[in-house]
Length: 94
Image 1 (tube, one colour):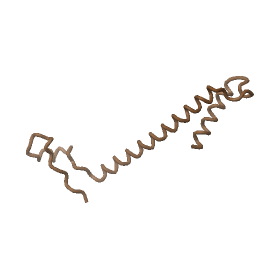
Image 2 (tube, rainbow, N blue to C red):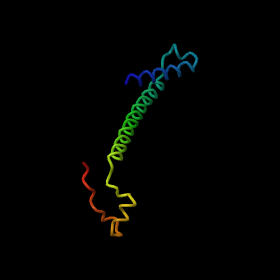
Image 3 (tube, rainbow, N blue to C red):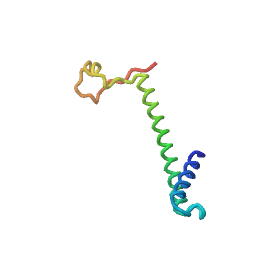
Image 4 (tube, helix red, strand yellow):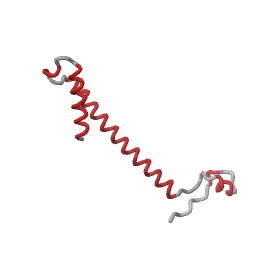
């Protein structure tokens, strides 16, 4: 949380420096409003990035463990039925 507040204060400081005479008056209500919006969007982006990393790790773990192998061409060729919806159950994993 502290990094988002520091980034918003630095971004609002950059906005204030861009406008002459704004430093004496303080941040405008628009600066405060959009600063809060940016903080909320940055927090949501961080949460989404963390969720993405978690899902990627989960996928990698499942791929490493080995799955059912439904997509395996060798196993599909051994299956005698043409209807792929009736796939045999996956073997239990150790």
